[in-house]
Length: 552
Image 1 (cartoon, rainbow, N blue to C red):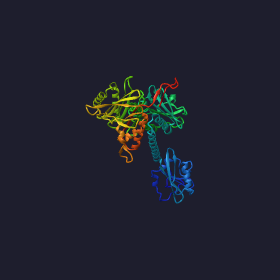
Image 2 (image 1 turned 45 degrees about the vertical axis):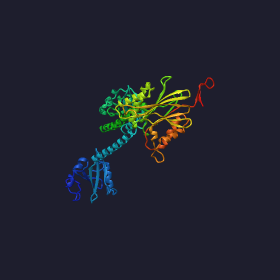
Image 3 (image 1 turned 120 degrees about the horizontal axis):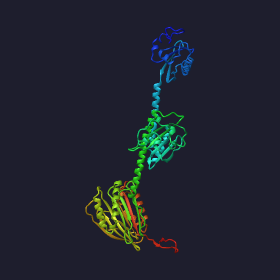
Image 4 (image 1 turned 180 degrees about the vertical axis):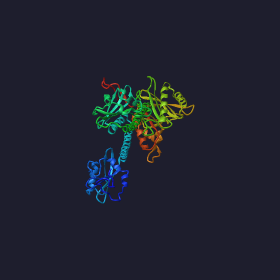
């Protein structure tokens, strides 16, 4: 290596202020003349540029980017510039110039490789963090399992690989698949998957850690594991599990083309992190789907039935839960048609203490118990006594009020037997518009060991209606001042307007008025049932052979 002590021919001394200590400087440094030749190099620079000898031209001795930077500085266009940066071997160097009084340039070189690698790694981690945040939002945006599978493979094909295949847990003998190639729509399929045909897939479907991608032969992938839109050949494969809540949510297969870089270890780890979030979202979606199915099945038994005409008598009902987000509550009604030609149809309307699902569960028990007690429906008092005993033996502490009505059509009249068990008395609207209150009374069920109930008889002529209702109607607060009860008097006036109307029209009219009265105030459950003797006479035939019809 040349030095500044004149030991090498042609050496030009630098100004004294530079000193000889620069030879031992830890960072590489070299001196270049204005003519583009190397004048001096220190020990570190000599190791970095073995061909840099005194008098040698910079071109071909140092990287081209450094030669260009030197020309800019000596030409006057780069004075005061921060320097230059460029690659050399596996390093990234940053060069800073110092111009001497005689026009020579001392180039101080700093190894910037580690800083740039750290910066790139930080940028990559920030991008990955942003991607995971966006992926989590998109995955959790829907609790639909099919949509969640689509989002998973879409994100994986766009950001992690060239294509992705999601293998769902087996249903029966087949697996549901979601396949997506980059920039292509998602396709769904079901297939009999041989998990052993893809190394690591059987383990991933059981929730075990994935095998390294280098263990998987891309050429051995079965046809179902590669989307039709994917441009073969496959160059690299990653198989990773989709962890779920307690049980695996499936497995994710990532594919890259042979002309792209293979998955490196950091990318495999990142794929597992993404798969963990996708698995949690899929598991939540499947759990929601299962719970929704169970809820729908149970709800069918709790929802009020659709009422119809039975044996020439019209039945109509309407129900509104205390909250618009709920479908069931503590009010209920049922109609049980007669079991024989001489039997009676039993109508029931009740109100369980409380609101929401807890109250709805008890209504289901009461309805089922009454269904079992139908053979005793001719004796309302005995029926209520047995129902009271069943409720007292239960684990709950709720009670209920209800009204039983046995209905029989006899010619033009409809005969009712009405029994109230702590419930508001049913109202009767006559053809004249007069509203009467039935004289029945009784005690609630499910609270006391002994109950009492009085049964009364009522007759309905054609066009007359018996209205059963819960206290959610009469105690509904609203009106102009928003705190007044709808009340029994207002209910009676509204019912008087329904004289001669069909049962369906009666309940709709009362429901509409009560809803308008309440507005957006909070309220209790509301239930109505109308039992009406229709005005119409049924003709068995019109012209001798066509079906009959109702006429006034």
